Structure formats: structure tokens, C-alpha cells
Amino acid sequence: MDSAIFTNTHLHITTWVIGIILFFVAVSLIKGGNEKGSKIVQMILRLFYLLILFSGIMLFIKFHEINDMLYGMKMLFGIIVIGLMEMVLARAKKGKSTGMFFTIFVIVFLIVLYLGFKLPIGLGFFA
Ligand code: HEM
Image 1 (cartoon, rainbow, N blue to C red):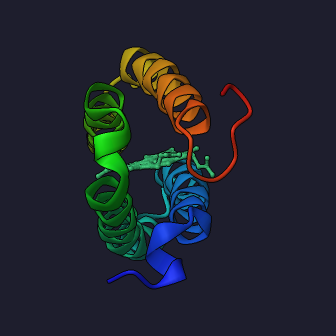
Image 2: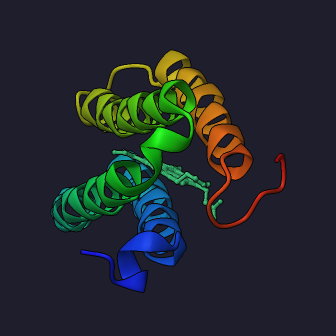
């Protein structure tokens, strides 16, 4: 699968940007007490997790030999970001505090952005 859609970062960026937006929409719907709306948005968000993972794994398979360790970390932290979004949503649903997990989410998200933009494919703000 050497198609450009899998070997440039456009698809991957599109999927995680939409994913992050859906995450914030879901959090605000839960906090606003809109159970039905938040369920629907969370379903779409879970589909986007798969698309983020799929597009990320395709890039990983193609390019990881450039720097196995950094690409490995990028994948690991990317998966952790998805896990943290689920943690925040699960806790918000139960009415538990979300502050700590949200803070960790922001930190790990920034690490993932840094690693993504440092690695050589696509945009290289920190290269
Ligand atoms: C919400 C989670 C994620 C965010 C915010 C994110 C963010 C990014 C960003 C900003 C880039 C750089 C794009 C560019 O330079 O044009 C990138 C590239 C990449 N991502 Fe992700 N990503 C996430 C999840 C994942 C996952 C789960 C994987 C692996 C399974 C993954 C693997 C990759 C790979 C291999 C690249 C190419 C790195 C390069 O050489 O530039 N990402 N990602």
C-alpha cells in the first residue's frame, strides 16, 4: 500500500484533528447533561480512533526504520492520548473529577505533537 494517502501525513492529521474536536464536543455534551447527543458523538469519535490508529500504523510501517526509537515512542504516546480521551470521557460520564486526567491528556498530547512534527515525514516544525 504505497498510495500517497498512506505515505503522506494528510490523512493522519485530518483524522486526529477531527478526533480532538469530537472529544471536546463529547465532553461538553456530557457536562451539559445531553446523554443522547454525547453517546452519538462518542460513537463517531470511536470510529475516528480507528482511523487515527490505521493512518498512524500505515505511516509507522512505512517509515519506522528512519528512527525506530522515536517512531516507537510516537506510536506509544499516540495510543496513550486515545486512552486518556477515553478516561476523561468515562470519568465525566460518572460525574467524577476529570482535572487530573485532562492535565495528563494535554501534556501527552503536546509530546505527541512535538514528536510528530519533529519526525521527518510531512510538516517539520521542530525538525
Ligand atoms: C490523537 C493521537 C495522535 C496525534 C495528536 C498525532 C499527531 C501527529 C502529528 C502532529 C504528526 C506529524 C504530521 C506531520 O509532520 O505532517 C504525526 C505523524 C505520525 N503519527 Fe501520529 N498522532 C496521533 C496518533 C498516532 C498513532 C496512534 C500512531 C501509530 C499507531 C501514530 C503514528 C504516526 C506516524 C508514524 C507519523 C509520521 C511521523 C513522521 O515521520 O513525521 N500517530 N502524528
